[in-house]
Length: 456
Image 1 (tube, one colour):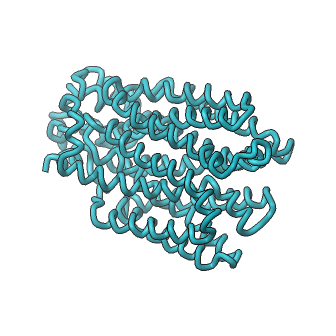
Image 2 (spheres, one colour):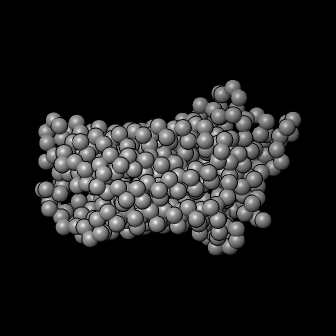
Image 3 (cartoon, one colour):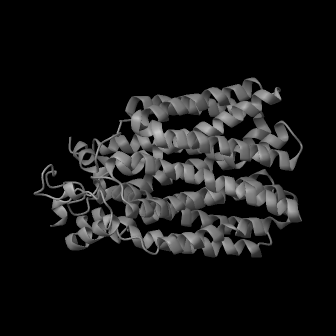
């Protein structure tokens, strides 16, 4: 048996594949934890360090700058050196930077460490997304790539719970300890990732066929229902696989049709989604505190409730909708709902219940819907030879949107007030229109079939 005769994403899900996917999904959990732990910590950071709106924007945006650069610079490394080295190194950097928060004395130190944490998260995404897509059977791929978004929200919920616990026990002045707790999850994740093998698709793309088969066997070993029919020569076996079988493709492939269209669509979709989504989520407790209630803990509890709603919606999307109806429906419908809800925030700005309800639905559909469509699309739409670089570039564009949004929202809200949400609504309408025009459906297709589309 050689790697050319194995369909790596055929057959039933095995315990080994599930374990590999969950360790990759853990990176999204750390990402969600990091953003929401800052969201709560800002309630202690602002009164102690007294940043002006511009510096406050930098505190929020610095991690996204790091994510953008981390994705852009390490995406090529995942294609050249493999998914596994980046998979480990990213979490080591995250642990060290998180512990550094204990030593912060001024806002610029905080900004620098936020950049380092963001770089680690950005570096992790191309490798994690590729590993999930390249180890999971095609009929379950959407579920597990989408679960990255659910893990993100669970990380966010955990961060809110930890923040409330620490602030209740010792006060908001202990925000440094809150920020440093991210290292705990990352250390646990490093331990769990120690058994993760290299991607068989990447190994095969680099001519390491015996190692590719060994990695595939490791992921499926000892499991009844392992994809034995994926071996050539057996009844019902597929033809030799094209996906990942060639040497790594040149980067210019991404700028030729049809991949160029996919790049444009995903960059617009993820860029806009992060532009307004990250800003709303990061500043949610502060915005709610100013718009509706003066209570710090009430605003945090409301944030926890909206995130829990997003988790429920995300589980429904992952377990039923994404593989039955598809990614395209989730992306377009979710973005349209977000546009309608942010319009309602503007229109009903003086009505507390309406603002709260619209905030809750906006957070839920962005984090439990539109983001999950991206997590599925990003690794599916590109061949193995350029997958790391493509995901890195698209994620860089998305995190650049987060940078712009988190930098702009504090100042924009000071200047425009409720009109800020009308601007966000218009951006969401634009995003929905571009997605409707350009987005494909990938539900149920194997990586081989998806790669054959790129040759059309």
